[in-house]
Length: 201
Image (cartoon, rainbow, N blue to C red; front, side, top):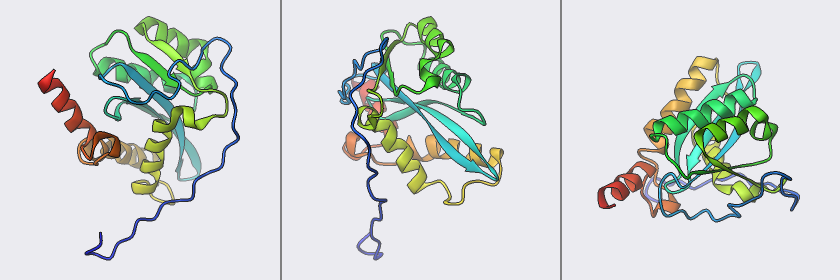
């Protein structure tokens, strides 16, 4: 970057209200313990909005905290529990239906709905939820979406749904998982960290 005369440019940090209200039925068992020793131990998820032509579309991601690898995703015009359930099942199947997983998210209705919680129950996945309004309880997901929107997504959004879907998959599979160095991984990509883990375990 120095040789090319490039400088890093990051958006200013957003301001959030602090809150400490846990969900009545689902406690915050993760409690910001983001350093995970094994794959398929803790997954986290969230939903973000993406501008397409003249309307919003919604992207749900499931991230494995061990390597920060996106392991499940779904893209839709509706931010509902169908979207988050599809992303979760994508992760569950792609990881070989693991046992003993904890899934962490915020308290959005697409994660508190009966449909989503039934999906967790069928997969035997334990649920953890951030305190209401406390984005730092799910910081790795916030960081993933920030990286996507600042590094990859066009500022004006996408022309159509198909273009957006292709670009998102290219980012997740072709760049973020395979190429992008991550500070949490000591400069290695998520795929490289997992390759080393499975080779040595």
